[in-house]
Amino acid sequence: MQTETINKLNSILERIASGQKPSELREDAQEFVASLDSAELAQVEHKLVEAGFQAEDFQSMCGAHLASKGDELDPRLLRLDEGHVLRTMLLEHDFILRFLSELEEVETRVASAAGFAELAPELEDLGRLSRNLLGAEPHHQREEQVLFPMLEGRGVSGPPEVMRREHDEMRKCKKMLAELAQPEGQKEFDVFQRWLGSTVGTLVPMLRAHISKENYVLYPLALEVLSEPELWDSMRREADSIGYCNFTDRPVE
Ligand SMILES: [Fe+2]
Ligand SMILES: [Fe+2]
Image (cartoon, rainbow, N blue to C red; front, side):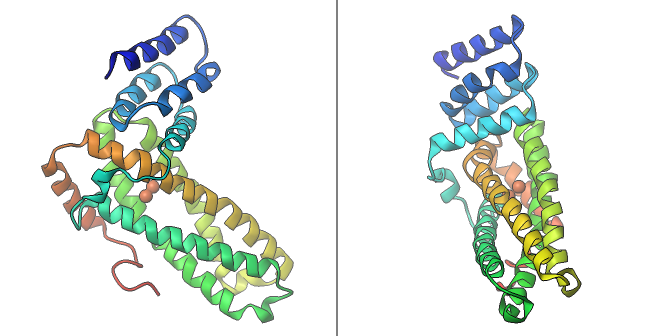
């Protein structure tokens, strides 16, 4: 870590040691975290969590870090070999992002329709998209069971905790979406419209932000922290045993 980074970190830690609450320092910490690279982020995160920052604090710090990076993917991620655990996850993210865009389009058409009768293609799309989003479960399990434990083993505990919590929240939304996609979930049109609007309105931004954090913060951090190639080979074997998503091991429905 550079001296300037260490000094800034120490000044935050000293303010906590002298009695300031981490919540009062959130803005300063965010600004500081936004200036770091992935390797520094890993080291600093550990120290901030030890000093009393919570997962929620770190979540907003990741947001600040993300905003400072723009939308350029780390070049090391772009150079990964086919079949690399993270490359597969990045590709799966691309599929998921496309499903989310489609889902928004379906929701917009449902919102302006007068009844189920005019929505046959949209309801079919909703069923397919809901199956595909639920079909992403092996992706989240590979993260939770293979990637996150490896990061936690290297002292990176905040981001995986935040990601796990988001997975759980998104699982609830995806289940709701699956229920809405069932014919019995569609009895009263205005209720269906409202529930679909609120479920899509919650799930889409949350999942997009989640993917951004993983693409631009967590995965580059993982490459930094887990630098030994043989680690990725053994993670690949574990990932294989969990399995892949319904939309990548065969053409998208
Ligand atoms: Fe995730
Ligand atoms: Fe992911």
